[in-house]
Image (cartoon, rainbow, N blue to C red; front, side):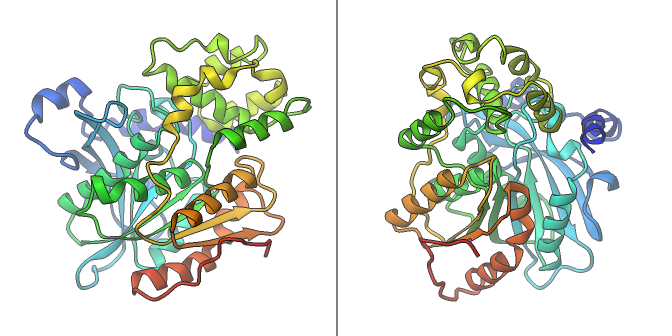
Length: 395
């Protein structure tokens, strides 16, 4: 299965034969100086192999977004827009702003260049059956000429929010009624998007946020993870995300030195992370038995400080309600990180409905959460009251 996904990572090159060529950052800056964030610059039909089952119209577009690294200027970003089949309801289809999980940092790992995983196909098809159109950004740096600034919350938020603007402004049959939904990296991107939205995109009518496997990093939690991993043996999947975090930082910080973060044992995997998508990189890291103990040098947190700082959310108080789904045995985003976010968001005044799914891991939680998130979504879409849950127990 992993090999097939690796081979399919080149689909963007093949699909590009029939897609409108993407523009570079410099071209966008010179050609579209009068444009605003969310302006579409290119559009082509999304190949059927990259769409969802029983979908209607599907597009891959390029749009402009505020550069999330610098906070100013416009850069091109790609995304896919997939509408349900049939005639749009009165007012148009509401939108699921899909924030994807980790795929890698290389251009060919962009989700709009590749078929959906079976998990995501099932998950997003369920949302489409509920009557939502799917708008899924690739995030800034994917599908263009730059490295993706992995886990940079401002990059992710601007990309998600401007992607929705682009869809609303260019595709008939959509309505400005939005659920922000994400898994893993995308869970963090979804929370970040809801955090930034009141100031950055007050024009968007966001009803609620659904996040599963959502990361949250504080100095205290990092210290706990480092201490627990000091003498570990065997593969730790969190190392894969650390490799991507460092690669993303190297794309915009010329002073970053990877040898201050990684041991000699881990350096080949770090170098490979620049090109390998998540499944083959995970296979490589697993084969080499990488974990916190043997892959990271003491003081790695200081070397990664700019990237760790960029993972912070601008506020923990969301304007709209938040659903959080956590797998009890999640090893990719350990439950203490996810429950740390729940605790911080609740303390800040966010209306949170949190669930822990007994015996389930990172991947299994995504679709297991569908019944609960459906009830949550029905409530927030119709302005019904929610019962907050800030201290969930396995269910």
